[in-house]
Image (cartoon, rainbow, N blue to C red; front, side, top):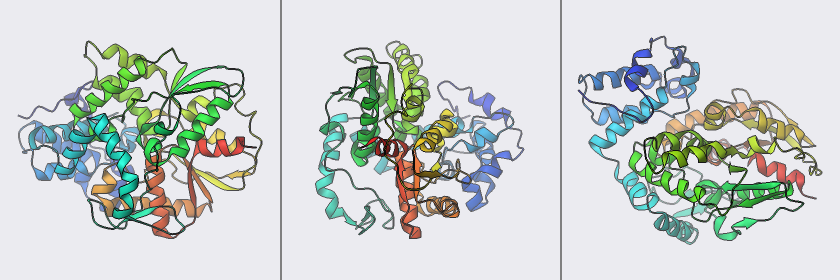
Length: 428
């Protein structure tokens, strides 16, 4: 019998809860494209129960089936029995990694790169100079396409790595622009640090315009989500400890730790405390950190005068895509819309199926590009149906996925982080 274990979850009890009603089938983005039962949450639960009972081996086919999950949690939200399928799938992937090991590329990225912050940051610093040899720019789009396979589909539009990362170009403490109302720390995440520094810059400017000093810890690291959802919990724990240490040793207390990405926010709020549960050194510190974490939109709308600096009207029709880990993962849906509706000149229109996954799911879009793109095309059709000129979102990975989908569809719609649009309306 195979023992499938996961911190913070009684997996045997979770799997038994499944009543095989098929509610998950109706909402699963992958089932909508493939139509095969084993790709649904119900199918994966049955497979893993068979593995646990010793009826199936942990083989390549189990690994392949478990990789076909976006971890979007649509099934979790729709399950009448409350089965935490996302935790079951993650546990299954961890079992696969423990028995079969990681694929070579992920092993190199996680163990050589992400687990070593200095190596990771040094490599990312080299990429701006190297990317012109490996990628070609797409005129008029702002993205780039791979010249060679490189483990990526050559149709895949990627955002260029910034010439200088956000944290390398900013002060560790940025002072408030008006009488100080408080202090916050900023967790940039990888995407806003290396690919979309304009998102982090906008966040800092909005926060300082509201009277807040912003502390940006220099040695913060990846939130660990890519490693954790791939089954490498050991690497995820190492990254978690780095971030807990960094935010536990701030030079002075802060009112909140601000995040710019739904996946990073879910990791810091929910996943890291589970990963480090039982650790005598880190458990209490991880929970203390989690209690302070706030998404940027969640935090901004609590400030008493956040609307006051708005003075510049923007033009166009805007809609909003709910990132899975921000909407379903944290319940943050109203706050970004409140911000968008407050910006003069923008016509806000609700996106049909706004909480449907965009198809990215981190490494899923790299390893299953065609399927990922099929899911994205549904999102593109919804965007086109409302005639949006702008799409706002709260996740840079969703942003890059939608930029790729829009490029594939030949659409000129702009995708921005919600906080960037708010900063544009603050500017004189």
